[in-house]
Image (cartoon, rainbow, N blue to C red; front, side):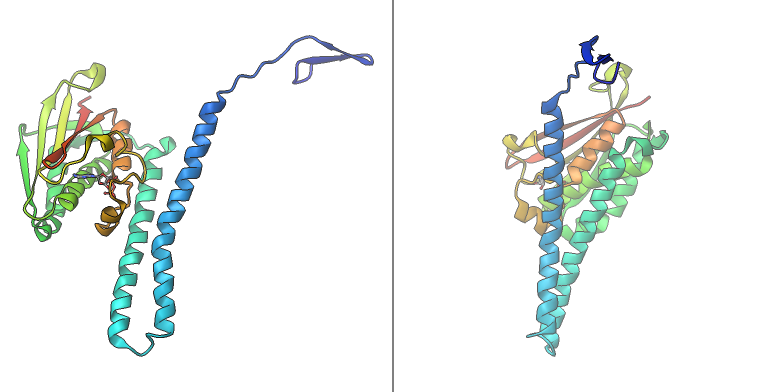
Length: 265
Ligand code: ADP
């Protein structure tokens, strides 16, 4: 029989078997659409700063040539736009790294308390420049999970950075670390790490989509704040990789709580 399940006998053809191939076309089409949307989004996100940079290069080569004040201003805008592209490429690389199963690193014991301390230290200047207070409330001295320290650092960094960025002056960001037996599957033992803010809050209609790549509530504000729209997508992937869960609770006008539950073993 050939690969179509047909047997060729003499001059005629007799069917001896039929191979039926079922394929979930909808799923394939959806994946294909997602890939196309992603490529379109990335191209758009890269093109916006690139167009600005090219525009200013032309101005510097033409009308602004020999005007030091204008040159300084344009160069500083170009630097901002180039950093935006740099951040986007960095976030895209992070996302592809956490999505790529084959490059998974072995899970080492990671002390969440230490990771939180590092993040708060790293972000202390950014927070104080934004006029935002950082508070750490710890219900336990030691909390070790199997994981990847760099990736967990990125989870907490992204959540605290968002809280500072969208909250801003006069707000407080509180990080808490507690035991939990909730949402950590059959293992029944784990830690709940929460980043709470008393910032603007998020309307409930947006919450389910926040972890989608490039989903922003207010694109203009996100870009202005240096956001790439990938932060929470990266968080979600890393949390999944640690067999954890993420919960988002928010009251519009009052603040938000991003909780990450991670199994302890
Ligand atoms: P971005 O790079 O735009 O910050 P994220 O994926 O990190 O992308 O977040 C997606 C969107 O969720 C943001 O654009 C913002 O609108 C909203 N968001 C995230 N964290 C907060 C927060 N703590 N308070 C209010 N809005 C938030």
